[in-house]
Amino acid sequence: MPYKITDLCQLCGVCVAGCPSGAITEGETKCEIDVNVCIECGTCEQNCPSGAIIFVEQEEEAAPSGTSQPSR
Image: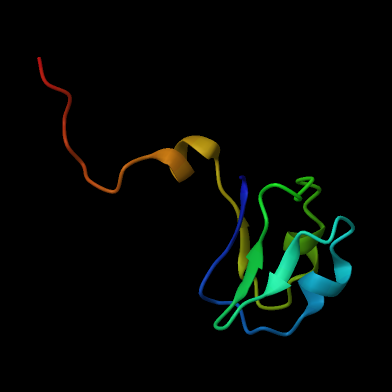
């Protein structure tokens, strides 16, 4: 999923109200995007007043957090 809501989210609800597919809901500490419903239109990122929604390349999303080198 290329759009991710970061910890900058202030639960203002602008992204929830503006999402044309209804993919965003308010969680306990930040809003959340349902990857199965998101149509990746970018409206949430454009509307977010706190800049909490970012586009993430899928390779970055799937990459492991460690920096291990491949074995030779």
